[in-house]
Figure 1 (tube, rainbow, N blue to C red):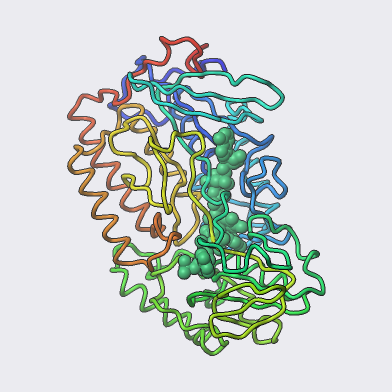
Figure 2: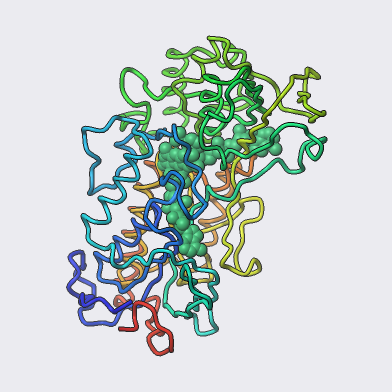
Length: 486
Ligand SMILES: Cc1cc2nc3c(=O)[nH]c(=O)nc-3n(C[C@H](O)[C@H](O)[C@H](O)COP(=O)(O)OP(=O)(O)OC[C@H]3O[C@@H](n4cnc5c(N)ncnc54)[C@H](O)[C@@H]3O)c2cc1C
Ligand SMILES: NC(=O)c1ccc[n+]([C@@H]2O[C@H](COP(=O)([O-])OP(=O)(O)OC[C@H]3O[C@@H](n4cnc5c(N)ncnc54)[C@H](OP(=O)(O)O)[C@@H]3O)[C@@H](O)[C@H]2O)c1
């Protein structure tokens, strides 16, 4: 963990206002999944001294099938549901030779190529688990980092902390559990631990949920199981992967234009989807109780097809487990060997004291999904659910945080920040179906557009403040210094 030799002032993206030869704050990134590496790349490029700690032995997080970190939900047959062009980082296109919706192995390879292309692998410490992060009274971060095979954690200090620990690894089971769950004769599992459909061969399977895990797992089950039931407490709009012969989420002059009011865009997209697939009721699925865009998109090119073949049977929500049977809300019952809960995930930060920061029921109110008000040196990267892919948004967030750490961006005054957060929370509540899965939603193109505007506004504030560093470099004065140590 040596201090990089890069002079802060020599950064390629130094704006006219940035001060050469000024000592910059040191930073730590928790996690080297697709969000952590996007942030790390920005820090590297912008000459900010940093360390990135990754629990696993490799980058890629969720996209490493069988990841030794135990946190990946990837199954053998996982393909992305946001298209290649939506997912790629802005300055590192994915190869045109891979499909529009590639397999997870391609995605993992892509993240490795990204790290090597931009040359910051040596800034990532692998097999290193951040077990505790605490903000000291002077604002410096004190981290405990446990390396695999060692006893006592190492204590390190940093000026800034970027949290990129992912939000799809801590399974949320039904709360409360279904009546009879404790005496069910079959197997109950969460989508997070599903790896392959071989376990389902010849079995009776009930898949619970209407999100993307439920779609994929029901489809995989339908090829080998004796019966597959898809049980949902509410309907969803199933969006095919292709619309009009191209990826449905492609950049489109109307669908993805943040200057066109959302209800107008929605009307066009709804028409396109209706024309392509008809209504959900045509397939025996429940009618969605909301408009398109009021829930996280459920994308599947295969589920409707498998339903039309009779290999998947839609059902209402399970009401109870009774011995070896599942009783549904309409009082029908079926035999089940497996109940697979595709009921989503919890947002958790095990390294923070829960009284410092936590996300009960997935609620966490940040300025533009990044800044925790009142904690000026803490940043969350990739903690958002876009209608679109996370990666380019994490990339933009990383660049934004670097502006800030270099004094090239200043936050709005606290009252304005609060108002912005409140507005955002009101808009979320107004727009989305009330559910723990809809607490960090954003629209991909709108988010980027607004972030760019905010970066410009904050650059003007920084200029007016003579580019003072909002996070003063203090950690270097302590013992047990991370990237700053040298
Ligand atoms: C089955 C599935 C399919 C998905 N498909 C898509 C898709 O097609 N498109 C899309 O945009 N999104 C998709 N997602 C969403 C997914 O969250 C993102 O693709 C992506 O993985 C987010 O990257 P991340 O870096 O934020 O989190 P992760 O990929 O979870 O990476 C977090 C990293 O942080 C590390 N870490 C965590 N805690 C610590 C710690 N305390 N110390 C050290 N290291 C730590 C982990 O080891 C891990 O490497 C999918 C999610 C699931 C579950
Ligand atoms: N191929 C892919 O790329 C792929 C595959 C899988 C997952 N993913 C991504 O991974 C993330 C997580 O997806 P996910 O499908 O695992 O979770 P999710 O999007 O949170 O969906 C959870 C589903 O379970 C339902 N649910 C929650 N609690 C329930 C309960 N107690 N009883 C009955 N139903 C309940 C939810 O219904 P409500 O809406 O009513 O809350 C929702 O339908 C998403 O970003 C998704 O896009 C992508």
